[in-house]
Length: 165
Length: 336
Image 1: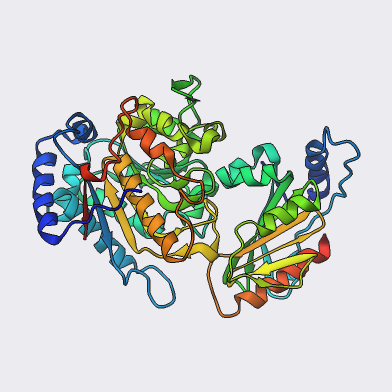
Image 2 (image 1 turned 90 degrees about the vertical axis):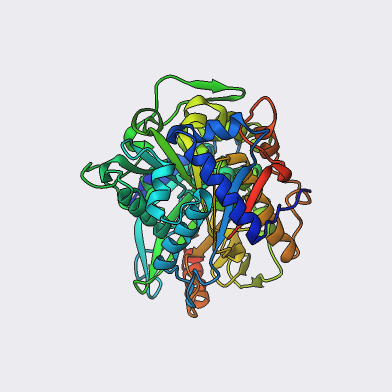
């Protein structure tokens, strides 16, 4: 696991390069998908970004790692956020090998309560979470509590992440 | 599929009395061995204590009700109405007691702080020195997910992870499990109480008492093959785990019945329960039934139907492992 703050570009490039070894023609553009504090109204980035290569993903999500590895995850980055100093949320960004892998994760476990949202290439939302994909990137944003304003706040943050992909 | 062995109040009272005799006749560090050794003669007791009002209207835990629920669970288990006396029968008060929490799921689905604090309070009231209580997990991140703050000052309850204490250099092997154990388990604690949180697990099916031990080793990823079977059972047979992890106070106050082990709020649910027992297999079997019942209620397939049967529970109960029982007829389930 790698923690980054200001050295994002160098680190993510290293992880993606590592993850891409053995994948001919694999060229991933190194991007920082995490909006800075107040880049999205009301949202503060809380703490450093953590990055996990596929082989280390278990450290973050234990047995859940298997489904992402099966779907071709290359690396995962995560950061905590806080909305108006109260609502806490986590943003997970999974860089998959291709869009098919991202779609596979997006549709897995989807329930009838899911609502389609216009974010990225495809997205769904629940009361406390939003999941969307854009190309080969899958983004999951989860709030730790349910508040009346949470869905709108999460959607705004999702658009903020989308804009940086 | 096996169902939950329900007990009425008369059975509960009778069972509580039996438990008191059982506990009173054993040394404090011999409880698990007693259950395993007399498996044919004695049922494994599991207490499921519930409080429907545990969460308030805004979904926040009521700390006062949590400690009352803990007292009720422990009193039912031991047969002692006085909570302090109950604890004196459960733990060696002059030794170091570890509380293995589970913060892997992040802030949304980790062992609740209110439960950890309640257990720490009762342990101290029973005579355990603050510095002889160690609350621990894999690392600082997991510990902080439970709402705890790292502390290594031995004048207070100590809270730190295996990332601080390190792992043994020598591997321990049992069956397919070949791992290095946390020094918190091997060098610090005389007894460990597991404080897992009830969750669905995408591979194992259910994660609770036994699966919580994945947080005790250096490379848990090596134990996930075969849907964690026999990894979970083999790991729990490692002597230090089998002998020191003697009791489970399972946090089922909140749970995810699908999409685990991470936090998936769309599957969040509040059973408002604690699941308590010495027999880790019986505890896990009970937890599995509770999760399966919830899944059926919401129209989802059981774990068997979802092809995620927690087979490690039966493996842990088999003759080779002998960790406890998964036979409902040999589990004395008390719902209080």
